[in-house]
Image (cartoon, rainbow over all chains, first blue to last red):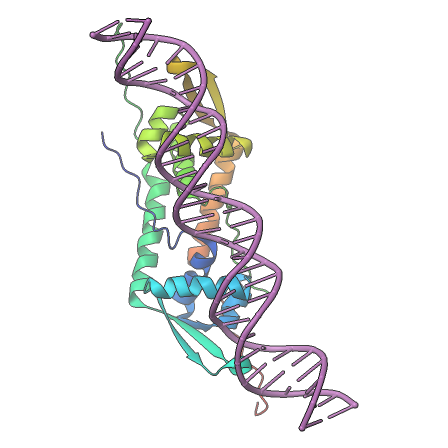
Amino acid sequence: MTFKFAVINPLLHNELRLKIMVALDSLDSADFMYLCQITDSTRGNLSVQIKTLQEAGYLEMTKTGIGRLSHTVCRITKGGKEALRTYEEGLRRLFTQGVPVQEEKKSASG
Amino acid sequence: MTFKFAVINPLLHNELRLKIMVALDSLDSADFMYLCQITDSTRGNLSVQIKTLQEAGYLEMTKTGIGRLSHTVCRITKGGKEALRTYEEGLRRLFTQGVPVQEEKKSASG
DNA sequence: ATATAAAGTTTAGAAAATAAACATTACCTT
DNA sequence: AAGGTAATGTTTATTTTCTAAACTTTATAT
């Protein structure tokens, strides 16, 4: 039978990372503090997760200034947009595709 | 401004648990070994996760037999179906709703 | 009897997520 | 000018969560 569920990208299947990507997909770019506000996350968590997304090539960061005047802008990449589409598609399929009914077990009386 | 992202149910936002629930939503009930097959999970992981879902009231288990003849059937509950719908709706909103553009920063020159 | 297999469960180790503490620089007060 | 507080991130330590390996129990085959 070999039924297979749609593949779920684990990098995007995380609440904060997903919100970051959805925000950037809609805005194209946003700065660190704004992402922090709208995702309702702590700065520490946000810092870790945008680095993860950057390392995956899903976003790029532009950092200017240091100390108190530092300013970090994130911009979604083409690859990031594609990954997000694919993830969304996969989920949609998961919800709509259904699962095959279990095959009958062979029994002595069969 | 107080924008808020849709709420994501963390219990359902896990690949294996989600697959279990999607399968049960489609089949209404399925036995342990069948879930194991179609979710492509190990028995250990499956055991843990269905217990988690049961404790959340999202599914019920009927266990018969012991040892080699044991047989566990899982059935989705009304609450489970509702939670799945809500989760799906939330995700859908997340993808479609968009994010407000950042407000201008007040500047001395403004 | 002994070995092997089947169906689950427990639990120990790995991985991931989160927030608390830290670093750096600017601005404000006296 | 010196000291305190605030702003913007980053590091790192803790907690939580996942995952699979090891175990339990009973049945079936040799």
